[in-house]
Image 1 (tube, one colour):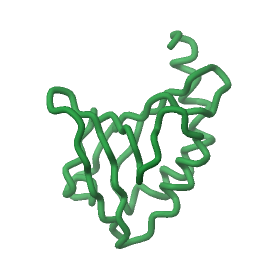
Image 2 (image 1 turned 90 degrees about the vertical axis):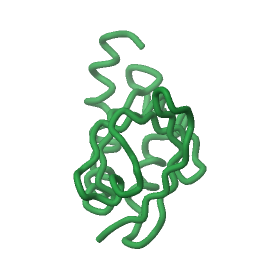
Image 3 (image 1 turned 90 degrees about the horizontal axis):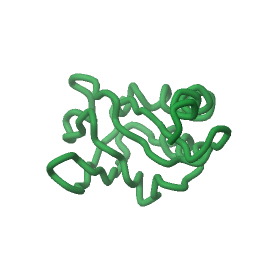
Image 4 (image 1 turned 120 degrees about the vertical axis):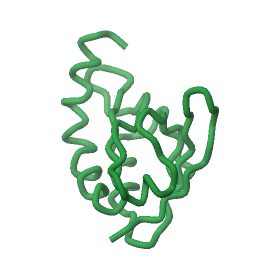
Length: 118
């Protein structure tokens, strides 16, 4: 990714993913850093966990900052629409499962099953 697009992709996707992520935070308890495949693209290239809130459902499930999310509920991240991912996160209701396939440095690929809180 070019440096300029690395800066601007976050600005572009805050409007695309921000509200869905904001809705999901209280129930899921994590935030992400997003990369797209181009300057004006809403197609996801990478989603990395930026932070996990202490005591959250995500922390209890074992999610860690730095985890690279590969799939969300079976939906591959690479090439997915930012809007589709926003919908997946926004649609998680308290008590429902969010299944993440993550790549963790030094540990490989693992499944994280988050049960959304209230």
